[in-house]
Length: 382
Image (cartoon, rainbow, N blue to C red):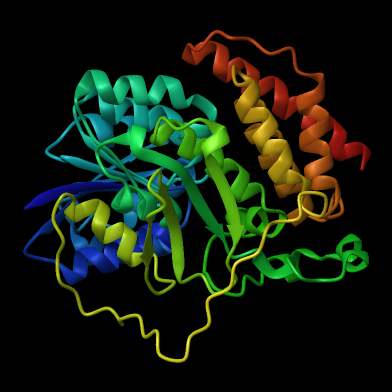
């Protein structure tokens, strides 16, 4: 029996993770659930899964939840201190980090320092501080198992001898705009950007998928997860989202992982690793399917090219890219800036940053705050 702490339980990944728990009641139990402010959904989850601890990031939400579940034997905590207690204390042996954004970094480090296995759905953790996190995992002897479908695919296809790898190939659906006429991109609305053709995800990651910034961040994530140079990481547009990623070996063999566009599969694998569990999820049917692959247009999707440049430069620059992009996406969703400005603002902030090679947490967080402040100022200017 594995005991879980699920960070971000009311979000898309968190809800699907609890479906996996419901599918495997003899293998999984929940110690802690955490969320930002969705009290109604958290109450439902607490009553269904009976965790010992529930954490709300917002003070008022924690107060309301405490009142709502006072008939249950559950402790209610709040804020970052509560989040850290959820991963450090108690019997949880596996932490699913399904938080959105840079906020996921400190809980990941805390979980590893406490000797917990990490199922990572928060790519920003590795984008912002990949060297720091992977060093912590190595010291602790704890696995970091990716939950992103693309990295889970590579994780499953990658053989022990890394020197035999010719390249990693990350697939991208292309989002809703990969074949839309370029002249239409300037007028993209938030509603249109949130209509992903294949996946049901949160708002921020859905917009990132539309700009291909998500894939750029995944390139940086793959570099750290698999200790692979950027020259050996490629991206292909695969609109069907059936082949989730591939590994090409030096002898010309290519291993690919295929599956339905169902995030419960990589979530369950992260929980079951190194084994595989049966489930009742729908199976992939390849009859009549056509699989197509295209080279991404980096002029049309400049976020991808920007992420490669930033990743190769390293230092504090990836943290700056991530922070600026988070601010710009939020501003776009709030109709403060147009769609095209998202990547432009991220690039402008990166260009103004004096990169530090210091890899400590304080330096990274300082760069993050600097980037957010400048990005907010640029967004206000439009």
